[in-house]
Length: 437
Image (cartoon, rainbow, N blue to C red; front, side):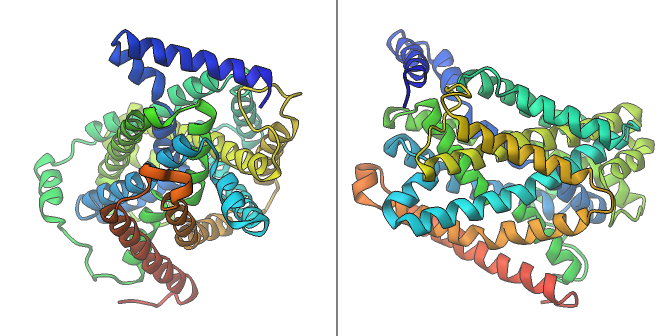
């Protein structure tokens, strides 16, 4: 840890202590929120919003609304653990795996994460291109502009500045709420769906319905979230005394992300009502198809929302990769450091963004295949990630009194089993297209 990093983090901590001492609780919350809001809204990325769009357009208002709420509740349970791990250990997720399980597992976690993140980054840039196409903007313009925006956020050499800028952009995800209002849904049907989990998709858990369910799980809980939030909590300098605020930050992020996801399903439900075949729609096609029902303003906001989702997720995902690399390689890995002080950290970050964006520009590259494989990988790699997470949070030497209680372990293990089953089912649907329950 260098002098600049120490000074920057000390300044942030002084502001926190000053707010606590003076009883300025609103300011204290403002100072401490960030990682939880970013990780949850960041997970509402371009593929996720398109998954929610598919849910609404193919099935309308029904079981998918409360189901998405359930998935975000699971995400909160998982991410709350990373808050405690980061605040108590003051170490990143990959670093803890390295320390407790050895170099092999540390390198395995890092390589697996960076590979998965790289494929996911490609899909984020695909989302940016799809949203930009609604405005007839070429991908050769959209991608370079997106890369510049992402990299500019890192030019301030301060975690605090990067966090505030990215969070401001992330909050644009809430644009799906006014879009849902413009769709003029049957609000009584919306309320009924939350109370009854009905109507359930016709045909039960057949192949098509199962894929949508599993896609919505993969749109909410993924491994990069663990590495990003724990790294951000550490970089922000949160301590065990800030855990309660970190939990509130994560809960706030989960609520905001749930509202945006549910709104996206409601916003696209007119396509189901009017029997539009949207099974293979992209972002621009969704926006264009919705225009007769939500107007030009609504469809424009929809396309912008998809672009924003891709940008924010690309920023968070690339940061989680750089954190993991720096942690395992024991290199400086803080956004409070300059390029000279943390060269490998920034080079990793820049390289993964530039290469992923460049791949989307390659003519005839099988982007649809990448999108499909990323969804499968995201679900299949989550159970091992949860395994490491539970082992770490129950380690008495690391966590002390902050380790998981029995009820918390039961809840987390139940989520892990649920995701394991989902992963197996997802793999079966990918390998055997006619698979059904």
